[in-house]
Image (cartoon, rainbow, N blue to C red; front, top):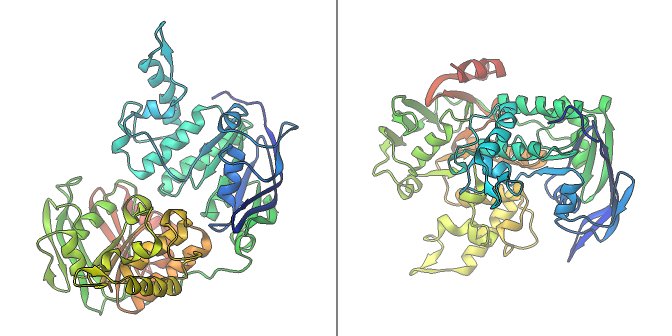
Length: 500
């Protein structure tokens, strides 16, 4: 990128958007200038995504205007926003998996040569390499996107935005799938963009990131401006107040349950990714065991083996002292083992199905008579789940795709809680959800543990791992390198075990 850019001056004034039965935005104001990092905070459903869709030209506001460099616009188109130097890094990842990395980064802006416009793959590769090096990615321009992890796909989206030489970069939950080191690298990139005169609008539920790089904070609540903070006013508690108007208590720790029965035991478990490195693990009834480590350490692979999605290269799994064999998802569920996957939209939900239908899926046999589903039993189960987990939706027939991230996660949890699990594996349980919903998920996990459920929590959020877990197991390259109790756990101790 060039050392400096033509600085943008952007103002959203009086933006209002009304949908049938709901006011998404009401008279919202927001401004940002070149060389400034503004944090935009709010709960899921506060209107942040709608406001960004207006700014990006995906939808038009019913009232208000967008003023760019002193010129008012009633609405923008996606092409118009790009032409003004506005680039987005979306939370929802939709890469073209049939293309390589360079093809994705330069999509729509491919480098061509000759009279027939043949793709100049060498020039594209050379254009993308400096961007990937700047981000410190583990993948190269020729790599297939199909094989990239969620974290790598997130870095790919960021690379796309950087390739556009944008004047305003909007980052929507950019670190939700990133490790601590990757997050720090991104924060360094944000500081670099700021120094070049680029404006950065940072939308994140990881409030410590805004504390680290933010110049100002703008809060949204229920589609309205909730106030703002100057740089010297930015701290977690004040941002939480902007978002929800109340304090959110940190999760209460339980008691390490080393004296309770071992519910889940894995011995000599080897994944296809690390066939020569074995995992030994014991999970007790009533405890939350955090599983920490860098992205690529093999944590999700272990979860998939335990749940029966993948077959182990070697090793055994026992639930309540009984071998889990034959290994299959059906056998795992029958034994009382359930998995809330990292990718809730791709693997945890049927997005076009109703809330009630999603919750009922694992319980269809119990909800059926003579092979026919009892609709009233399905509705009763969903209604009980909605009340217990405080799922916010106008009705249970609403499609899961229409829910906020936090409520989608509650639906995934609800469908497994309905079967009464002995062991609940949660992979990145609060990825992309707001601070209020996080507190509710933490409270739910603690309540389950207090009721005797064994919880295995995989998380890349260091604060979450330390704050919620009774013990923390740390993985590095397919192997557990150490287990920390609450008296010895710290970021430094986890990182020391997470790297070789």
